[in-house]
Figure 1 (cartoon, one colour):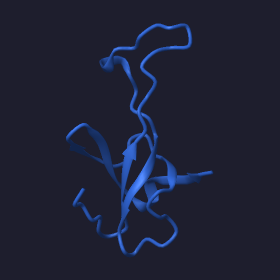
Figure 2 (cartoon, one colour; figure 1 turned 90 degrees about the horizontal axis):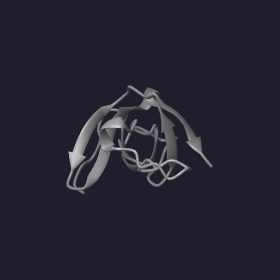
Figure 3 (cartoon, rainbow, N blue to C red; figure 1 turned 180 degrees about the vertical axis):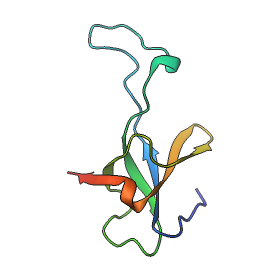
Length: 86
């Protein structure tokens, strides 16, 4: 991808949200809430407790969107990561 986070920042690729409900109703993009779970795609060199490939939960309103072609990336401060999912 060509993006290296700096200063305790973490690059996360958001998970796609389900496009329809369990009953089959399709949810339009404008009504979807962005998910707060994603996969770590890059970490700053000064972050040692989170690594590329970790699945993490993060603060709902934390981070900066980094739109890429067809992908939904977010750059987060280390303290906005709530935990690593197993």
